Image (cartoon, rainbow over all chains, first blue to last red):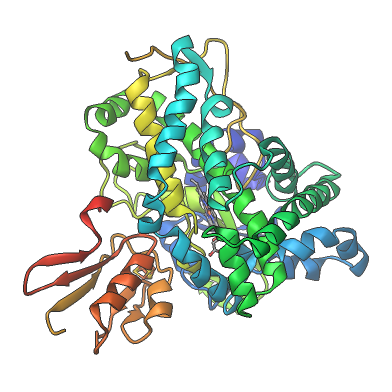
Length: 409
Length: 79
Ligand code: HEM
Ligand code: SF4
């Protein structure tokens, strides 16, 4: 393990395969660690992570602003489409602009508002399972975990008929910029193409809604634009962000959660015997192996974190997975316990940027597991297959999860 | 109004600051970046419930102390 620390290689194959072991070693030796290779701080202790996430006064999320300051004018122009859209993403903005967007959208994503979609999600889950359970095997991500969140987010923005294959392709292209294949030399061009295509695809939808307002999310954004609260760039960027952020993370959590339960069949049985545990169970799956491993902040001033002096302008990799396994916050943190309570994990982050889609994701994942535990036995990994994760510092994303199971009649 | 009680569960609050933005006179931040109730003034119950609804964590509980009725969160949410 010490060799990793020396190498400071966050993308080393061992770290991608088992980030928890790496971040545990880091937390035990140096919870606020200067990573020379990444040229930033890596935070792995719960207290430090939470302190930073809850302190938007001292820590900025202005990713595009900091990126611009590192690039020449020419470099910036070469990725203009990325800047034009991503600088309006609420997740990369600081107050007060962030606050306006967040307060506006939050109303559509509250726990109560989201309950409205539960019957629809339940139906999608059943329909998707109908197609695969009889065969006794499936590739869980392609055959199940992908369908549910993608269908739901399109329904939510009021565009159920959009072409999913295209959206998936463009989302992956945008993802290349941030998360995946940091070693891909054309990653910026690929992301520009993805963004441009998605924007061109969404624009007519916005215009259609301007003429024919409904109760959907796009209509809400347009009325806020017309009232002068936000501008057209905010409308487009928010649509892209929701489509992009609304499916992959949830899909990955369903996959990571299934795998966690496969490795702890007694926990699967607990959920099966008492489905009321599903709410707590989903919180535990988020804590145990959430789909977003980390996020980034920039210090807006000289500030102390966990006894270390952070200087203005320095960046911090905030490890959500590291914090979620901190024994100072969680008893037996490496055990999966679907009855864990309280469970104040950081899988959706904390503070002002706490995931807007958290209630939606929770409900979708609850329904996904309610469906699975009812219809199939605790699965096992398909013979001769092995686990392979996308090389990403941010996402905990399996490439596929081929499973076998018995259908429950 | 004197019978309404509002509490924040610190085992749930993630410090989103949403409650403070919606009702700055009622909610404030403590030293850990979590919400606390600083006073209800004359805020009407409907407004309190609507604000509690905005909490992504269902950390805010609104009760009628005289009847013991929980006005938020509703039982259906299973919180
Ligand atoms: C299990 C699934 C999900 C996980 C683990 C997750 C995780 C996160 C995290 C960690 C953040 C904070 C990022 C930061 O502070 O830098 C975040 C923000 C966000 N998420 Fe999610 N997310 C999930 C699902 C969703 C869904 C389904 C949607 C859309 C409907 C969504 C939309 C957003 C948005 C818009 C933000 C920005 C919020 C803000 O800046 O105020 N997420 N998410
Ligand atoms: S809205 Fe909820 S999570 Fe956010 S600060 Fe208030 S009580 Fe805490």
